[in-house]
Image (cartoon, rainbow, N blue to C red; front, side, top):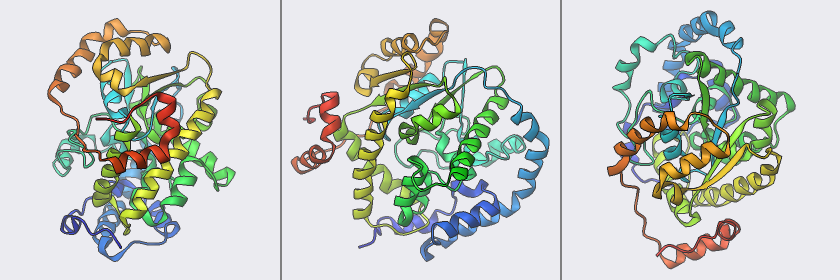
Length: 374
């Protein structure tokens, strides 16, 4: 049985974050994912029209900034915030982004990664067409606020986890190729790495003198590949109770599909993807973590971070030898004060769900010492 929840809402949601994609890339993406379902053709039309219309912008961007961006030197090793979706990566990313030494991917740069600098004067006008809150939670949408790199990779590359959400019928292939690089040709993987490096250089070009701070859950299973591009990269892994991650991730997937899907998907298929993706992502991280040199990775429990943010932030800075904590303290406190009234989603967990999570994700429950929530 296909998911039909909020169908009317789907029909009214025309905007789509892929509108900044090149026309050639868009055609390739649709073909490799075996088309678009009829109910979502209005979204595809929106992407197509904007993609064609924005071609001169991408061309001008390349001519004006392409050479300069390629010449950018990544002086400081990037810091990658990783962890399964809904584990606190957004909270930690937004908090650390208040340290002025860092630059980061913004929502604006993900929507138009090959044109954001050209259209900078129109940014405020275009922001009016965005929803006020993210579809997966109650976090306010801010064009200049930190966002995850994967959204930009979805516009720039045919293999991105976000395409699992855009093309849920082909989610398994997208997941395997975009996260674990299984089935990709060597030249395709090299192109993925080159695209990511070019995008990070774009952000650094836009923020001279700053250090790149990344938040991207799919990178949790891409450690080896990230180290091929940035051998000295540093990682912050944040984790959270698997029981709450399960409920939050399932809710997020359904809500996001309502906004982003270009194909139909059943709730049963989504459920299976949530379960299996978590297992593969986390097991892959545990295997690859050993490749990170000592002093370049730190792990933190989400529940500890929100209980005493400043204590655990200092631990992160000290463990990764990141300078400037005392200098950044006033700005970090500003974020915490702003977030003091923010309330996280509350979930009711029945016994059946508890048993379901314990059966499938016991390996992380035991590893991290979590107990069922009461």
